[in-house]
Image (tube, rainbow, N blue to C red; front, side, top):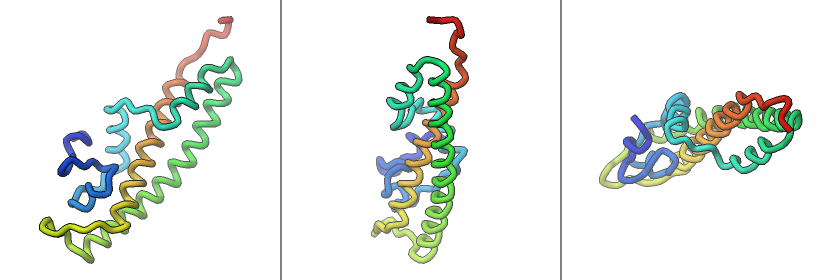
Length: 141
């Protein structure tokens, strides 16, 4: 099921009201699959494209540097996403959702922000992996 199909009253998983209205916390694998479907390249795509335009060997070095940074961000964001998901679970147990009178809490915002961070991290990694898989012609001028 895609994010588009998972909309709740027009809200997707990157918006706090998706969770206010009872939307599920998606597993990282599902987020990664959504990135692949969307073909989104991440908010850093322009910086990554600039690095890709460099001559070798600087190109590969810069792309690898971006990849290392994104992996660090991904690990941090996965940890934060798990924590936010737990906070949302706790909130939902304490305050069972009422479709008649839903209300917004920081737990909803936290999980939606971390979802967005993961979406971008996966998009950046996909972009970088695609570019690093391309071997430039060593003899091209």
